[in-house]
Image (cartoon, rainbow, N blue to C red; front, top):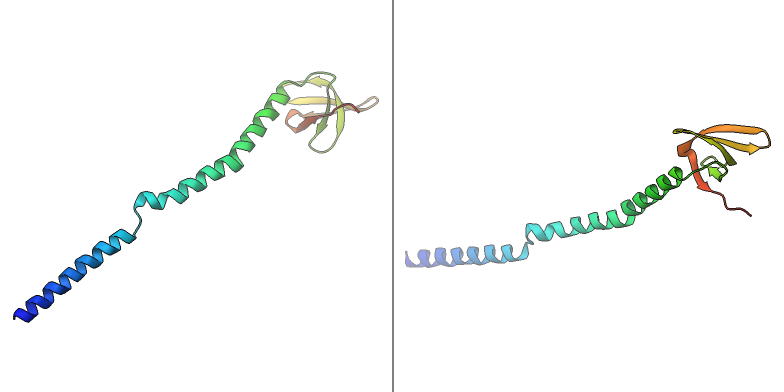
Length: 113
């Protein structure tokens, strides 16, 4: 009986030691979250933030449009602004040839020369 008791005692101590070692090996919940948080920050600073800045500058450009500006549309048409409304821009693309395009499709100013 004494041998059985000592054998059970040794096995129980071994199980306790094994459980403690296993607990020490497994990272905590917070340590598991570190890579996920790092990926979110990388995604924000490399993808979202530049896109937000680009949209902001485009909105400022569209608000600053005025008659006589030379612009390029997103479809590749160069023109001079003849008229502006809230939604549309009237562009002169050749002598006595004008088209009306959505203001959102004016992509960038054209530098002279």
